Length: 182
Image (cartoon, rainbow, N blue to C red; front, side, top):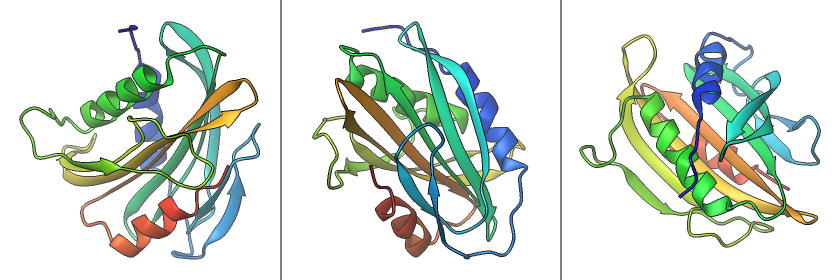
């Protein structure tokens, strides 16, 4: 399996954690910079793009995120080089996300199920996961997250959306995840 480094990803989430938006639950359509990918967010997003390493290769990570009703919401996407192992890279991203909230999937109850949306590639690593962990401030937090992939010409675009909150509303999570469109 390819070496996967996601240290930069872990740095982005605390930055988004500190961002606040208002008003809460004012849903709007947002396009991820540099892509045609659209998402629905309940608040005005902060945006960032930076180079991160996935599979020992640099990729541009596009992130939009905001805070609404005490929940941190983020949507991230990267376009992989042609021939990259999307399954291995997505599995590494999932592992890094769990580690970010100090979850060891072998020792903690992590719920997961297949997650496929229209236009998405049917990869075995396309999942929805829920877990409990600890945020960067040391407080207990719940996570609800999805990972998927879509074709982008001869390349593959990975998409990851996540909510962190002490209590996650199923309506909030479902609206966010169902609003992801290539």
